[in-house]
Image (cartoon, rainbow, N blue to C red; front, side, top):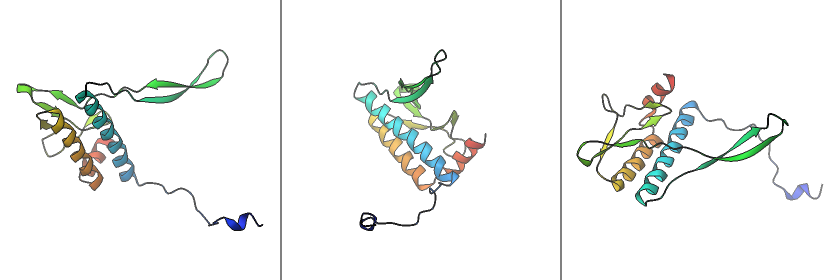
Length: 139
């Protein structure tokens, strides 16, 4: 037992599971991070195309193998009147209502768009949108 005595041994119990609220927040924060990367790439004149790995099974041989596939990320903002852009926050396919009767943020340029996305991310982290996220996940 000379080798094991050099290790720090403890008694561990299963994985810590996240509460449903924290899971929803983390999901939305991940999507907001994608939107920031997309907006930054568009501002720099580049394309943002993340990839994901999928397991595909060959029907003829029955073998499974991993393939890289481009993940499509849709922008949450759109051009409106007089050169203004409007940002809507999505949870899945649902648009979140940020305040009663208001579902978008008006932004004037790319820099303001990125700042607004970062501010919304901070609001999600602090729990300001928990009720809206829960309502969207129940629909």
